[in-house]
Image (cartoon, rainbow, N blue to C red):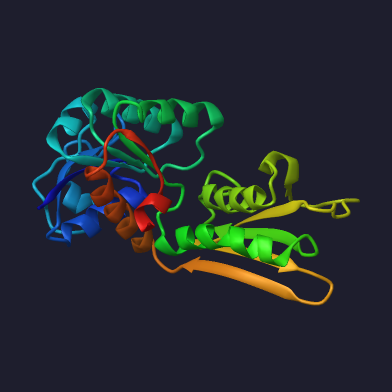
Length: 265
């Protein structure tokens, strides 16, 4: 059965990738694409915006009408726009995959509250590989024990606004949970000056350069060896395909809060 997809943030890098990936699959149809009010792309065919053939769907800033046109929405916008979009989707009873990053605690709380009325899947990273990594990290932490220092390094393109990445935070939270402590007690962002490593801390370091799509490495290092687990995304299509898989999953779910871990399980 074809899934009618709504894309919020249609002119962004990932919005265009999702539109292109969905248009290439017989399992999906782009039903609506939302752009910011006043966008120069208003009224333009979203297939053209995504670099594929015309799809007969014009970019719109009318969120209510867009939500009425489709089955499931995918949000790749900005934190403020994402909250507004998800709240309107909850009123309409439409499932939403929230892939926007940089959400603060208050914004996340508002989005989570919407899950009481409609299905909401929050995914800071839609890569299946990364989410498998989140699944296995606790087992690695527990097996290696406290003799291994933990450092996490992430790298993205120069235009990424938030740091560290939502994915890096998710990986660090998985490690902290396995250690039985909140991440806020263990995280250490960057090092400079006199900054000796403290026992049990999780070092988190962000790199922003060029066109790096996304790289994450977790290092477990003792006096005698180093274990490194890395993930590199070669193309944004990886995340677009993950978004489509998440949308298919969410279509069948009741109201509630979900993650990519639910999808891969």
